[in-house]
Structures are given as structure tokens and as C-alpha cells.
Amino acid sequence: MPFAALSTLPWARIVARALSASLFILWGAFFVEHLTWFSTLLKNPPPAWVWFLSLMHFLLLVSYLVSMKWEKAGSVLMVVSAVTFFSFAAGINAVPFILVSILPVAAYSICWFRERTKTTPV
Image (cartoon, rainbow, N blue to C red):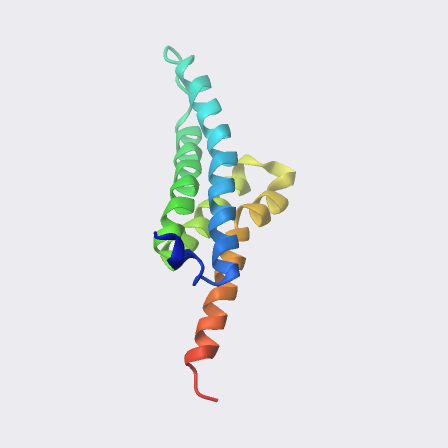
């Protein structure tokens, strides 16, 4: 994206993309760390539900990247994967982890609301 086009984006969209990139790095580090742990278990692999949660974690990471191009599709994927993953993996901390993980959706929602009010006749 050219630098001039960046200045035409609303501030909320820039914040949403920055949050998506930051959360991708944060949760990506945990994902890589857990994958290295899985590699030590080649003789005794984890059960299927652990692989399913790893898939949900991976989809959460993918959603951060997808949301930068397709905001609504990425946001839906982000909410579904965050709720599914953290509901099972985070235990008592699930709600705060989910809320932090879907912060980009809140920022994108501000953009959608602003765009809708601009195009809706009064």
C-alpha cells in the first residue's frame, strides 16, 4: 500500500491493523513455542483434542492476517476461533483472553459504523 493511501485510512482502521499485527506476533510466539513442544512428542503424540485446539490457534493467527485484507471475513474467523480456542485452552482466564484477542474487531466495527453513517441518508 502506498504511503499516501495510508493517510486516507480512518484512524480506527489503522489501530485495528496495528492490533492485528501485534496480536499475530504475540499469539504466534506462543503457537511456535507449543509446536516445538509437539516435536518432542513424536513417539507419544498428543490426543486429537489437543490437535483440534492447535488448529483453532492456527486459525486465530490466520484471522489476524485475513482481517488486514478482508475485514469482515477475518473478523468472523477471529471471533469464532478465539472463542473456541480460549474457551477450552485458557480455563478461568478465557474471558479476558477472548476480549483481548478480538480487540481488532472492535476497531473494525468503528470503521464499519462510520462508513455506514456516511452512506446512509439522514
